[in-house]
Length: 124
Image 1 (cartoon, rainbow, N blue to C red):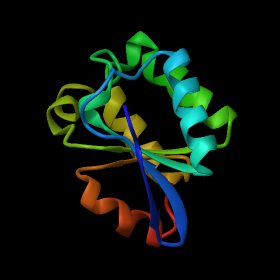
Image 2: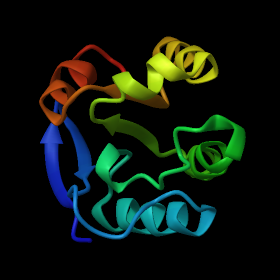
Image 3: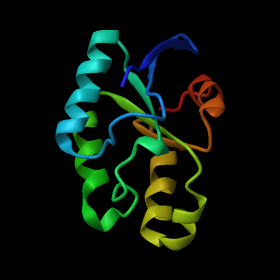
């Protein structure tokens, strides 16, 4: 997994490629933190293709543990990809995504192309 460093809206952002080891466990979050620190990035973009299959099932706690670890290290995260099917099947996930939209540390976008607009508008 070789993430790409880009400047977006004046911020250093680390973009993870859609192929590679799945992310979800707290140890995976530490790998993301280390990569972000090495790139001096405060924001990481993770495609949904890299998420552990249990990540979007909030009852598993996978997302909570992963995202909390990133928050502990003051790393903002943007999850990029279409999760409309999962949103349609899970009220807790819809509520979680809605709450994330109100904050600044976690954001969900439909595609990587939306990251610039998100960060230009002050999100994540």
